[in-house]
Image (cartoon, rainbow, N blue to C red; front, top):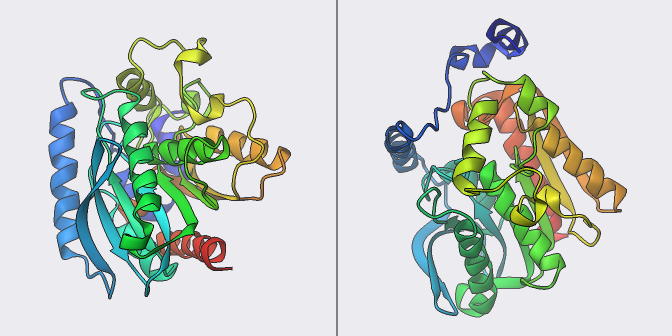
Length: 313
């Protein structure tokens, strides 16, 4: 799609970002990391948590340890969400989706455990998945100490974090991880194979097709798209029966759009209760670009309501 064609479909509120690109080239990766970390650190420091208690901790389980940030949004023992941040597997830290974690803790009245997983290319697969599993297992093992309701734990993730959350849900369904009652996936990375939306959106703001290709090269070095045994993309799982109820949200003008739609259809076909929202005129990361925009607030409200129903009903 041409840039002018994309721009005509982009909501007017987002057109100020029409020229923004995520350049994940090796020579530019450190610059992008520093810029993103600086912006998100400043926004996290400026955010009023509105009564949510926040603490940085270390999750340790069977010799593994990972940094986590705990957001307590209601009296204990509370249901919990293990959350994985965005960043194409190569960007971000505990500040990246700080706003989203505060929103979930407050609105869904739960405890959110945000995972500071290791990043590629320094730490390719399976480092990030191992860290997310460590956080989930730690939360359950330490549920009394953390004042959590271990029978009401959900997983959630944004973009690449959506892939990690989906893999946690799959591991739980396979009984290789503690059970989870719900998964929330926003603009998720789910499939390392090419899709029509990835081929169409080659110059969209926020994230584009070339960035998707580079992301997978970092995360799965040496993998080939025709070799499913070498990939751990959630969409590669042949059988999705038995997965927990699911909420999926995605953007219209996003190279990741079609894999979200395909995964939602597969879940529905397998009898998994699935709620799907596609936000027209939006690009990848719109809720981070304009968190106070009406559409972003609508997204937060829908996500939080879904979490609240899953965790409390």
